[in-house]
Image (cartoon, rainbow, N blue to C red; front, side, top):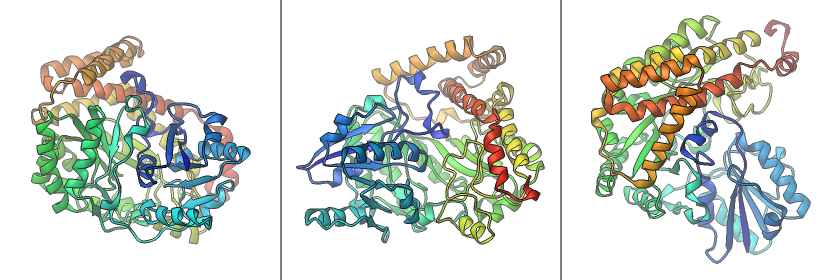
Length: 520
């Protein structure tokens, strides 16, 4: 059997990093971890190829080679996935589709050319599908079942891709999250009981990446890496030893919740294991909105102080922010959100408009109220939403775009870097072994930042770029590398901001037609 795995192309999003890839000389931000894992679950005797459309184009010859084409990805890859499916249909090659791109059984109808759907976590459905395929009785839809033991998940087949094309590789320690935020799909997809891998399993996956020769940043795709603290601490202890023995080849980005700031031991273990960036869902300073969406762990904490605590422990907190809750009003944008972002010093905030994905508590509530405009809006940086907001839509869109325009202005960005420099404890960083490949990448990034930002970034941007480097040199020289990286991220997000602040009058007009007079 010949299987072709196809990873669809991403739209421009926060996490596509499309505008910063040139700095590190890479073609894509992240590899298709899901497809690489699925490939390892297929019989070893089968022939397998993988084409990542974020790296290369696919030809009819590629498709015709396969007996089956497996497609998987996220909702922001739906458009590209449909194009691939159509081409496979025209060539008579059956398609198998799975992953978060399928929000529920109903969403299968959005992909009419697919032969077989695998919903939910693939460890539960793939073997059943393969057995049915063997006896020529494969069904069209394999629904999601119970939540599987993640330790049964195999090591991804990294040999199917050229790792040199990717800025960051990926692993996953834990699935599910103990919290139940109303707008989040994690509980519906992966449940509320965290399922961590054993330290041995996790380290074996790191070994596999290490053997490829890759050195550099790794994204941990856990829904909440500290969902089970006891397991997380044991893994971090062993990971710290593993990293130290090899000269700290990897630097991790993880996702956690605000309660991390309550546990000094856990923060110290993260730093010793080589974790650098921690993504927190702060969402909003509006406590009424936090209560509305069930994010009570944020309500009970001083979020600004928690961010400061993480920095003082040597971690670099990131965060997403949301506008458009029922409890929001026009004052939320300037008086609350912009001031809050500046106060936290989250250097590159990721601000989105509230969406209600199918399967979430928010979707069920708003559907009962007749306030769902569409099943999914997909990319939430495009100035669109799939709900009818309480405030007028024009007010929401204008306020949202103003947030991006303000927080990514050179001066506001510079001010947040100053907060970062004041609080970040760079002395806690682990001593990484110098690697030729990563050194070349770092020097390339520095050179291009000088050229593209420091020389040709525009007067205001260039002014604050050089001013920041000067301040860093005297105030916190050990954070110099981090500050250069922050300006490169800023280069990316400033271009995202430009994309957002250009009004799409046609899109707004079409959306307004679907709303009642009170929303116009």
